[in-house]
Image (cartoon, rainbow over all chains, first blue to last red; front, side):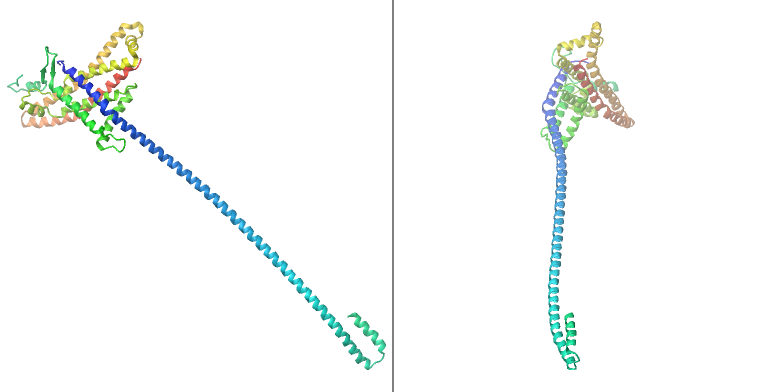
Amino acid sequence: MNLNLTLIAQALAFASLIWLIATFIWPPLLRAIEERQQKIAEGLAAADRAKADLAAADERADAEIQTARAKASEILDRAHAQANQILEKAKADAIAEGSRQKALAENEVTAMVQSARQDLRAQLGSLAVLGAEKIVKREIDAAAHRALIEELAGEI
Amino acid sequence: MVVDTELTPTSYIQHHLQNLTMPVGEGTFFTLHMDTLITSVFMGLLMVLLFWLATRKATAGVPGKWQAFVEILLEFVDKQARDTYQGTSKLVTPIAITLFFWILLMNMMKFIPADFIAKPLELLGVNYWKPVPTADVNATLGMSISVFFLMLFFGLRGKGLGGFTRDFLTTPFGKWMLPFNLILNIVEWVSKPISLAMRLFGNMFGGEIVFLLIWVLGGAGLLGLLGGATFGLGWMIFHILVVPLQAFIFMMLSIVYLSLSEESH
């Protein structure tokens, strides 16, 4: 327990060591540590940001797909409607054409019937005359028969 | 001094507890303990060198192995210092780092058996060599008195001369009990560095004596050699605990004292 100058020398050494540590060791190391912390924090923030960006992009893509799908179905609907319309129109046209043709044919038929009837009537007249001539050749009362035949012909 | 011709256990132990002295002036005060100084300065420079190897190329990117290790060590001390010290000084962490690792390295000289150092030096003509600087009261008091002045500095810096004086005179009993406050504060301020120094010195000195006793036993025949080796191992394992613990206590109490002296009552 003999105190001597060593004490002061030790104190001086202590002071110098503190100075060395405080100047050359701790500040650069602390700076490096803090810089690294900063970097890590930035990295984590960037990762978070990227995640958020990705989610937003996903959402946007979903929305885009949704609208595209809606547009597509709308187009499809319109096409269907148009097709139906065309079909309807074609059907109506066909029906109209058919009925026109039918009317035409009917007219023709009636005209033919009419002419046939005319012919028939004419032939029937001569036939009746011929028949009447035959009857008249064995005549009883030509005048009386003529009135009868005319009445007959008028009925046709 | 000459080595005793007759080697007894007492003379052996006394011999190993003798410092290598060098007078530098008149009177007993003006001598230097060369062993303490050389070992402690060597250990201090070793500490700075080892840390400097890590911080010389300190990078914020991926740290090297040694840098990572030093970062862990220093951050541990820094965390202790910051948890305890609430003030603003940037100097507290370097003080804590210096105290902890310097004392740790000095204490670790204990792990080298005394004669491993003393015998080769004796052959070189150095008769006395006390290898553990912290087992020299001059070293521990030198540090604790430095801490004392740092406490004064922190107190004056934190509170100003007026505030410091007022706190010194009026706490803890109020201004009407001024003399008692004065006495109490003086006792408190003086006891802090002394207790700090004595705790470390006592632990290291006591441990050193027990080591020397074990080495005496180791010199007593074959059975003694076995006993000395066994006890030496046990005591060393115990000191693996004591050495960092004492360094840690010295550091922590210094920070606590610095923190206390800075904050107002």
